[in-house]
Length: 120
Length: 107
Image 1 (cartoon, one colour):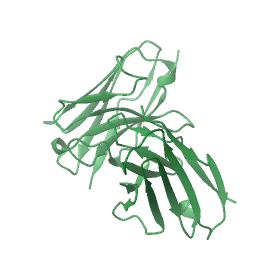
Image 2 (cartoon, helix red, strand yellow):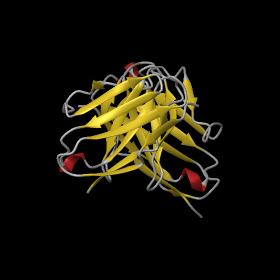
Image 3 (cartoon, chains in turn green, brown):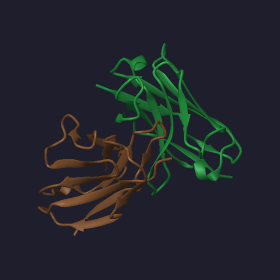
């Protein structure tokens, strides 16, 4: 059974930094592209970033480019999101999501999310 | 980036009804279109991929169609568990984008 468990969400001040983690199990982690998707309170889904199976390709939404960095450690079956220069508009539930292939934008499984609150 | 526009934003229907949600892409995306269902307090669930293919375990009451820029999700014989928010998502580009969501409510 595919399981994705996010962690690291906390309350942080504007301008601060935070690192989210996602522990994956139930599938061969290094065979798949992985995504981060966020959802602000009461709002819709917003794609944040993706990383290819080997970490060689990464893509970001314009809203986070230059501030967030996605990475993965295939030896630990883990996905990360380093978030710098945080803004109040980054407040959201952050989901880790698995893609359907090594270089795929299609998502098939989601974690339960970790809440990031940016507030002074 | 490719913009995805869903209509309507909200929809009221009764148990047993059939409803259709529309998703329009700002440029052609072939059939690289997925649909997700999200219930309050829960993670999204994948329903359809490649515009019309059902994910494993999804009942056949859900169906999708379309290609290019215009797509639809149809849900037949609505049951109480179907009332949720539905999102389309394009994956033609690595800069994937979601529609704004359609909230399906009980009338």
